[in-house]
Length: 164
Image 1 (cartoon, rainbow, N blue to C red):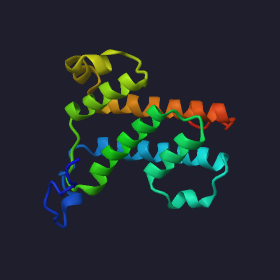
Image 2: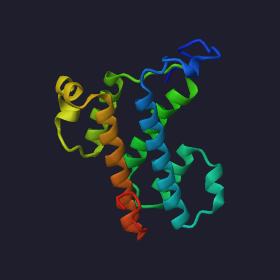
Image 3: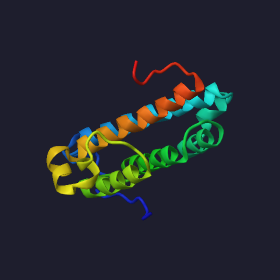
């Protein structure tokens, strides 16, 4: 993993400019990550962890979910990858994610077990980019990851909130 260095100059008006050409992508990733984190916290609270979880890093929450709940390791790994993508945005001014970068992840996630509504999302790069684009494959991935975490909710008897 290369160091997360600024990709843009930190000027006073940077956040007011059109420098963030992919605000929708940033918002999608950040909100998706927050929902996943809240879902994992709900699992941890249900299995007996207390308020200390709110001081834990995201990777620690995932590790504890995998170790202490029915969350499969492959879902934990996807969550950690999503965290890496989120961290690129949060710790590298001007970072922009490319379709190629996310498509590689989607192929990996599909191979690990994440299901997609259309196999071309992960198997046909050209078609996937034309039909779904970066926002589409990220939306599908985040939604399907949340669905898998919701399966952990069901296994533990936690009231479903993601689909409610």
